[in-house]
Figure 1: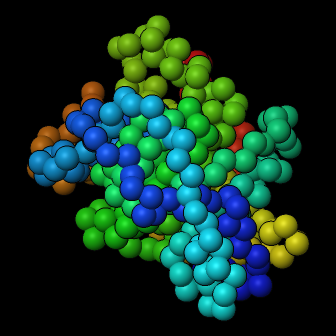
Figure 2: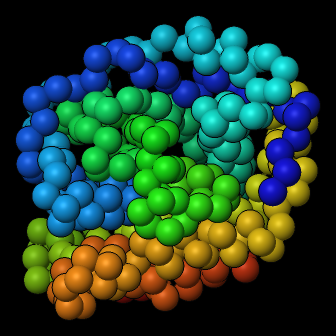
Length: 301
C-alpha cells in the first residue's frame, strides 16, 4: 500500500478530542451490537474475559468539540504520512470520497459526510459515554465514527492482525455502518430484531458482514479516490494489502475469539460472524467492487 505524498490531508473530516477529558463515569453496559462496529464488540469481549472494565453508560453526550489545531499543523508539515493520525485522516478522506460517488451511483441516495472522532481513553458520544475498551465504533445518534488510535496496538499484539492495511479496513467497516444508517438498513434491522427477538443475533451478524463487504468494495476502488484537488490518495494497493484485510477478518471472527478465550464455540452467541464469513464477505466486496453485491440479509428484512 502506497499513499500519495502529494495528496492533501483534509483534517476537517476528523475531530481531535485527545486530551479533552473524555466521558468519565463508565460502567459495565456493553455497547449494543449494531450501534458500534465489529471491533468494538470484539475488544469488549476480550476485555470482559480478562476481567477488565468496559462498556457504555446511557448518558447524554456527544456535545464536546475537538481542537484540530495541532492535527492541522502536523498534517500540513513535511513527512506527514509518517504520522499515524495523519495517515488515518487520509484513509477517512479516501473512504468518504468513495461513498460520495458510490452511494448516489449505486443506491440513488446522496451521501452525507460523517466525521471521525479521535479520542484518548474516554469520550462522550450521542450514544453515551465510551472508553477505549469498546474499540472503534459508529454512533448513528450523532453520525460519528469514534476511535482511540492505540487500538491498533491491541489489534496487532492481542488479536494477531499487525498489517498496516488493517487500519483502513477498520475505518472502512465503521463507515459501512454509516452507509447502512443512511440507507435505513440499520433501522430496518432494529425493527426486525424487535419483531423476531429469537433471531436478533443472526440479524446482527448480517449487519456486520454487510459492513465488511462494504469495506471490501471501498478497498477495490480506493486507488480511484482523490482529494479535493483531484490528486489520487493511494498510489497503489497490493494483493498483500488485501490479504492483510482478510487476515484481520479472520482474527476477529466470533469463533476464533471464542477459541482464544478458552471456551467452546457457541454459535448462539455470535453477533459478528465467523472468521470464514468475515473473509468471504470482505472478499466478495473486493472481488466485485460493487456495494450492491453486499446483500447479506436476503429476505430477512
